[in-house]
Length: 593
Image 1: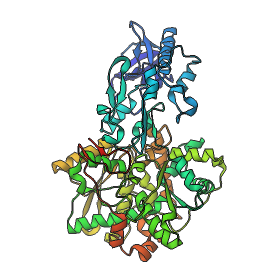
Image 2 (image 1 turned 135 degrees about the horizontal axis):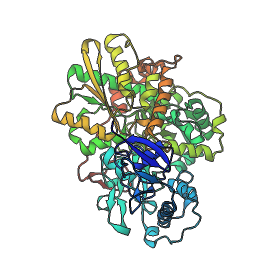
Image 3 (image 1 turned 120 degrees about the vertical axis):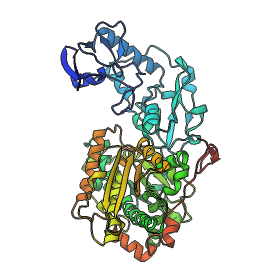
Image 4 (image 1 turned 180 degrees about the vertical axis):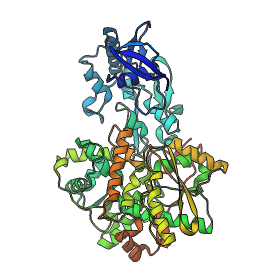
C-alpha cells in the first residue's frame, strides 16, 4: 500500500495515495459537510461545492469529495475563506429551494435543513426564482413522487440510478442556472424505464424524491365499519421499524410492531412470512420440476418487483427464466381474499389487505393488472416502513414501551427460513433448505448456508442435493450486479441452476421504503437481526415444517403447483419495449423505454 503524509487542520495523518481529502479528513476525525457525496457512491460529482477546503499553495478552494491528497499536502477546513464559501453555497441552494419545511416529508430528516442549522444560517438574502415555484410535481408513478422544485442538483439520484442500478432514468438536463435533474424528453416517471426501486429516494438529501403516500386511504379503510382490514408485514420491517423511534439499527421489534398495528385498528395482524414459506414450497417444487422434466435454467427468483420490472424492460428475452411464483406479498393477498375469507366466513369484497413493505416498488406491484386472480385485487394498499412509522406517531402510540404481542392465526405462523427473505441470499438459503429435504428426505447437514450471506455483489455456492448432484446457485443484489449474471445467461455461459436476484443493494433490509439513512453498516445490523430471528430454537427453520402451511395444502391448495395454486399463486410477465400498453391502472396510457 502506497501511503502519503498529509496535515489537516494541524493533524498529521498517513493515508493511502489517491484518498480524497474528504475521506482523509474523516480518518482524522474531521467531518466536512457535503450534500452531493454519500459513502457508497460509485463516483462523486463534486456538484454541491459545500465540501470545499483550502489547500496551501492552491489559488482556489477545492471540492474535498473529489480532490485526492498528495504527500506533504497541508489542508485547512475551517478558515474564514472556507466558511464564507460554504455558507454562500448553502444560502444559494436555500434561495433556489421552496421554504416549505414544516410541510415537507423530510422535515426533521432533511440534510439541507440540517446543514443550514449547522452553519448557523438564519436569513436568505436572495428570493426564490419564480420558475422554480411553478415547476410541476410528477405524481404519475404509483410508487415515487418527483418534486423538481426542491431538487438541489446534487446528482446523488443520478449516481445511484446510473452506476448502481444501471437504469439511467435520471440525468442532468440543461446547463448553468437552468440545470435540472430530469428524465429523457421530460417524460413522467410512469413512461420511463423506472423500476420504482426507490433507491433514488434513499439517497436524496432533501424532499425532491419521496414515496407516494397512501396513509390517508388506509385511515379511511380503518374507519369504515363495513370493511374488515387486515395487515401483513414483510420480514425486513421487524429489523428496521425501531429506527424510526430512536432504537439502534438491528433492533428486532416484531412484538411491538404487532401491538402497534392492533392499536391502529387492524382487525387481524398477519405476516408476509407466512406467504414467504408458501413461496418456498411453490418455488422449490417449480425448480425441481424444471430440473427433472425440462425447463429454462437457470431459474431465477421472482420475489422482487423492481427486479421483475427491470427484467421486463432490459432483458425481456430472459423472462422465461423467471419463476412463475407471485411474490409473498401477492400470494398473501390472493389467499386473504379466498382462503382466509372462507375460513373466517367473511365476504371477500369487504376484506381490505394492507401491506407494510420496505419497498416502494411493492406499491407498483400491487397495482399490476394481473394481480387479481381471486376476482379481487390481491393487495389493496401498500405502506412503506416510513409511512407506518408516521401513522404510529400520528396515533400517539408510545412504540418503545409497547408490550410484545403475537400474530393472529391462520396466516401469522412462519419459520426462520421465511424471515431471512428480508436480506440478500435469504430466499436462496430458504429454498435450498426445502429442496434438499424434499429430494433426500433429510435435512441439510447445516441449515446455515453461509456462502450466500453477506454484502458481496455476486455470491456463489454449490450444494450436493441427493439425486440432483451438485446444484450450483448464485445470488445478486442491486441491479448492476444482476446485469453481470443476466449477460452470462444471454451468452450461454451461465453455469448455474438457480439464481436469486434482489433489486436493492442488501435486499429488502435496504429497500426504497426503509428508514433513512441506510448504510452498509446498517444493512449488516438489520441482516444480523433477521438471522437471529431465524436461529430462534422455538420456531421451525424450514418452510415445509410450517404447520399452518401444511394445513393450507390439506384443506385448500391440495398440492404444490396444483390447479388452485396455479390460479392464485402464479403469474406471467410483460415484455416492455419502447411503446407498450400500460400494465397497471393509472393515468398514463403507455410506458416507453
